[in-house]
Length: 111
Length: 112
Image (cartoon, rainbow over all chains, first blue to last red):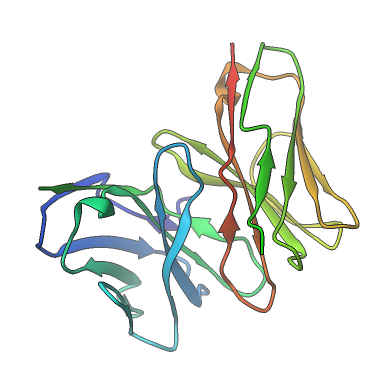
């Protein structure tokens, strides 16, 4: 039962352009969403988060959008840089429940 | 503050053996979670401990167990290792006042 889904396993974007990573969820109880970035052989590092009471959160080049009615969130990276090449995981939870991760999207920035 | 520390960094075992992985959370964090990462499977939740009590548990067989000590340090044990247990095992801690999880660098386990 995959409650958090990232349907694109990989994405390639030209340097300087916008990268858009998508995530869908099924559990309407989720009220907090996060994006993590992961390099090979390292632990994920926190990128940005959003509470269900908001529909947008911005931090520098990173913006997360939440559409609760569609149970969809997206991460926008503008402009994309070579150092952004990594695997991105979206995650969600509610209350004291476990943090549930998607399967990840490998982003490759083409110089 | 020091980050989440996991030891050992790499481990090679053979089928049937058992293994114990260790995790020291960020100072002051009382919640420790364990995740398994395999290619194509994302991060699969194993269990979470809070104040020495298991609070949540994922869908893994009983061969996977864990515990947490009074100083919040945690250990994870896998008995009767199988080839499919080869994975990156990640530990994460969180400040219960803040929803973010902070991850360690993981232990890469290879079962031969």
